[in-house]
Every structure is written in structure tokens, then in C-alpha cells.
Length: 413
Image (cartoon, rainbow, N blue to C red):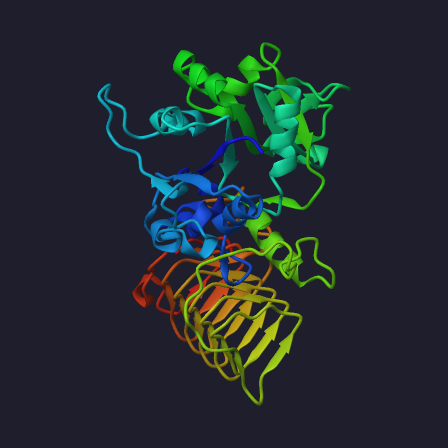
């Protein structure tokens, strides 16, 4: 195993996740009940024997800082190596805010230069997957590569969401196109790169472009020793509302593609001290994932429920994702919704009502499949009627809603 530093890029804003990232970075968004998205990348590092890890932050990092702490859940609270949380800061040349992934690494080149390293492993902090990085790093060493990138097959119709890679018969990367409209290749860059240390340092000093995918990689392919590592396992980019929702509910399949119960590859996380799940005598729970501290006295169907969620008697939660400490009042209905942390749904309120065809007026490209999103700490008044493709902004009070409590499909509150 090469001496490797892993740098997790967790600083970008993610507008495609709508109100879910209004007050947090995407890496800190809850997923699969008890986890945060960044837990998967961090767990991959330690499960691969990489204990020298830096997390590069910028946008809305407070909840991410709280979650990471000193890295103890991932065994990264170490005197040598361990977890470093790296903040953007002013530099003598006037730098400060990072304008892209390459910029973020460039501002931390001193960390790379000061260590005895062979390779730098760059990772995205906003993807869901389980991956042993050791074969990737081994391939990089065997080929004597300047850069080795992990790639994954995707539907050609989704190519405009990814950097698309063309690979020759010897595994060399022939071309890299960032989010092309048309392509003959179905191999997408996973945002996972292994760089030879000195090559990366020289590259970022000579090339002042801000982003690896949009700028640097398309320029250097063909002029450096670049190889692809084809990853065959589960991988999901949950950077849109629909992708995030689908990745959550896919866990409810009889044999989900992402196995969270594998004792050989544990996903570590920060867990609060909470009691076990309580299910009332009149409750009904079907095909759902429940987390510690939940109290269910109503009906939960085909839903993912995070720690501390309360579902009152008579309430119905259906085809939804409820994040930590959300509260669903008596006789309320939550249908095909994503409800953020500490949100409160008043008694007899109906969230997700009516037809699905009307897209959100402010975000038509993000909310158009019938999902309604309730933001962090929002309060839905008693008896409210909320339509489909609705976005409720974080911390919305009951006074923000119409007096009759009716919010039509496609609206934003």
C-alpha cells in the first residue's frame, strides 16, 4: 500500500437538493436513517486501512463539524495522521473562498508537501457507496500512473450529470468530457482520483484552473499517464432530490443493492444515546426502516425513519423519508415527502395531496416528480393541506402559511 493521504471534498453548495442544503453542506445530509452522507466515504477510508484523512469544507459547515468531531466513530482520533478538518482561510495573495475542487486542494498544498507521501486520494464527500480503495491504489502503483480515476457504468441518458471517460484497451484514459450532451461512452467518473504526489503539486502550481472535472482533467488527458479503475459495485450520486429519495427507498427492497448489514464492511457514524424503537399497540409498520429512539403509534408504510421521529396515533406516513426528531401529529398524513430534521407536522395536516403533474414554480427542474420537501425545523399548522412538488423553506413558522392552510401543488412557502 502506498503512503496515501485521503482528501474528502465536502465544501461545495448543492442547490439541486433544494431546501435540504439550505442550511448544511450535502455531505452532512442525513441518509438511511442514522447516517450522514459523508459517513460512507469516511468508512471506506478506514475499512481500506487509510487513517490519514483530511476533510475540505466551505459551504454551511456547522452541522458537518458537529458530526465529525475529532473523528472518534471512525477511529480517526489519532496523534499521527487521523482526521483533519480543513477550513478555507485568507492567504497572502488574497485567496480565501475556494472556487472549485482544484482550488480547494490548491489552498491546502502545504499539507501535502509537508508529509512523506506517495499518493493523494481525492474523494467526493457526497456519494453513497462501499468501496475498498486498496485495489485502486495498487493499480495506480503498478501502472506508474500520474493519475488514476475510478469510473462506473451509468445510463447513457444520464451522461449530462457526470464527467464521461473514454478508456482504451490497455486501461488508459483517452478522453474526459465534463457533462456532455452526447457521448458514446457510458463510463462516468466517480469523482475519485489517485494522484502521484509530486505530479499533483506541480499540476496545481502550473495550472490555476479552479475545478478538476470542468477544467483540469479535460486539459491533461492525453498529455499525462492517466488510467481508469472500473468499479463494479453499488454507487449512487445523490446530488438531486429525486436521486436522494430513490437511494433511500431502494434500501427497503427485499435484497437491496446497498447492504448496510454487512459485518465485513461496517458504515461507522456518530450515534446519539437513544433508547430502542417503541411501536404502540395500535401502530402498523410495513416495509420500513426505523432508527433508534423512534416512537410510532400510527401507521408507517414503505418509509425511512431517522432517530427520534415521533408518529402520533392516527397519523399515516407513506412512501416518505423522515429525518431526525421530526414530529408528525395526530391524524396527519405524510405522503411521498422528505421531511427534514426537527420539522413539526400539525394534527390533521395532509402533506402531499392532489395531482403530481404541476412542477414547482421556483424549481421546476428539481421538484417535478410529486415529491414535497419540508425544510429543517419548519412548522406545518394543524389542518393544513399541502400539495405535491411543494418546497417548505427551513424554519418556516405557521404564520408563513395561508390562513386557510391550503398550499397548492408547485408552490414554495
